[in-house]
Length: 109
Image (tube, rainbow, N blue to C red; front, side, top):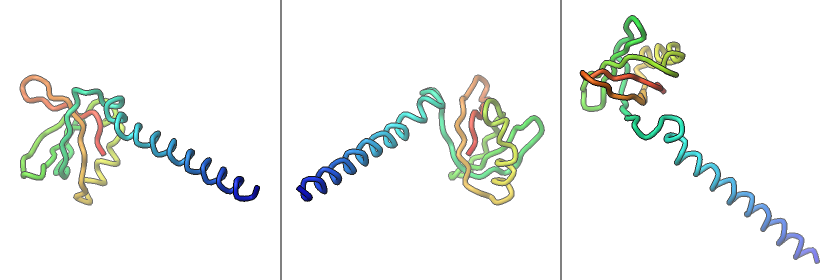
């Protein structure tokens, strides 16, 4: 009788763990799509400068300088961006490219 209860408890814990694993994995896989849509591009590097109007310049891994204009959630990330600039920290930028090579940064992390 005790063996059956222990087996049932282990089975329930494993079942809960599997559901949690599937749930977290699903959010990780589809989180970017639901947050940023499928037309969003991604680039990474270090912020070199932050200009007026919340425009900033990012230096990518291949040493290309890209200037972004902040929109959406990027507008609320000024303190975060300034810290990344001072610390020369790795920065991920999710953006949309518009006509005439205008890059609109939607989210900066």
